[in-house]
Image 1: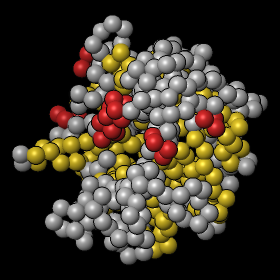
Image 2: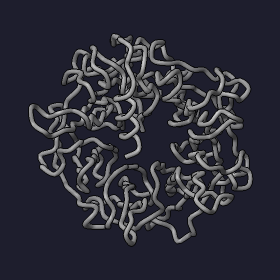
Image 3: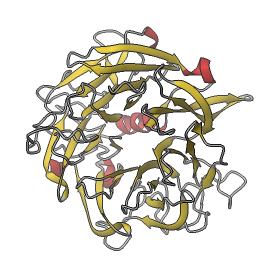
Amino acid sequence: MRKHLRITLAAAAAAVLTGSLLAATAATASAAPSGLQGDFNGDGYRDLAIAAPIAKVAGKSGAGYVVVVYGTKSGLDKTKRTLISQDTAGIPGVPETGDYFGDRLTAGDLDGDGYTDLVVGVHGERIGSTDEFGVLTVVWGGADGLKTATDITSPLPQSRNELGWDVAAGDFDGDGSTDLAAVNISSPELNIFKGPVSRTGKAAALVGIDTMEETGINSDKLVAGDVNGDAATDLLVMGQELSGDNYRTRSVLYKGGASGLTPAGKVAGGYAGAIGDVNKDGYGDIVTGNFMEKSTTEPHGGLGGAITVTYGSATGLSTRTPVRINQDTTGVPGTAEKGDSFGWSLSAGDTNGDGYADIAVGSMGEALGSKTGAGSFHVLRGSASGLTGSGAKSFSQDTAGVPGSAEARDHFGASVRLVDSNADGRAELAAGAYAENAGAGSLWLFKTGTSGITATGSTTFGSTSLGGPSGLAYFGDELAH
């Protein structure tokens, strides 16, 4: 619930500058869809969806918007983009204060036409004149990019309190159609909208899973990926479970299969997650980030943050002992210190083309000298022995070649996303600092080479450079997964 609280406080406390939201040029249409995951316009290059969830739209503070920057042979090209809000033609709803459009994002080909669709969890959207909230806005991909959308709500009454609190897409039953998973804020009910989903918003079926009843863990955050290497997508459900008289963070893997999602074992908890094959054995490995994890150098309550790697296998979770990594781990730059928030954000991708998934780790609370909360991110390397600190790199706004300069409470690295946008087999990195420029927010793009992510040639941009509004927006706070 950390992001919801942060957004609520920021929206209530800060005044927003007036801005207008205009649809920009979509990417060039292609003759046939590539079928590539993350390719909204089907041209063979993955695209990036960036949220500004508390931007003022049509005069409404906290209404929010999303911008999609399209991939090209040269990488992400900000001149080829589409701005999407509830004030955009073809998008249902109207901008309202506190909708937070874009606060949750995922992507998948829900209607099976070969184009990836964008799913926006609008958990602050009021349903009619009721006291129920939350819709899932599916913006349909196509040769001309993202143009039209459909709202989906849940018929389950227990799921109508901020539905879309988190969303994830994948083929959870292995039938070849993409399904959509969504949770809400007040119920452990996990909604599975079975694909294909028609453009009228009708799913093939709806399945409700009470994760609290089945596992003792509520549904708060969702991460989709293939852990056991079969035809079905697995789903990591992150939340809390009761331990004694207190709740602790805990996660559970739901294994996908012909009969749907079934619990397959508990793993380390946290507030961020990613799934990638870090040891190249054909099975996805689970990485969870707990930014409040105690550091080894501050055993009496230090909150430096850590990540935990739980390895995958043909049967699901491996019997291998999970590995915990923080800034005190050999090879990882820096030192674990209170408030670093190491593990606040995570993303998996192969940054150097060696076939091993690497992990980007955001440390948005990292202090740089006297600049508290300036923020940084690390890139940890995958290897035959698994995720390692060896060869790890760290980047901040004070790194040579990175545009701008670090300032206190920028929270650089609050979001990270690895994406191969130029189809060269290596993932580039996008990093967000939602608090940059008094909460306007900015995004940085980092190139990659045979040695992985590099600061050389990195660029940065914010909302206004893409035709969005000025002022408080938290641009870059969320990046579609």
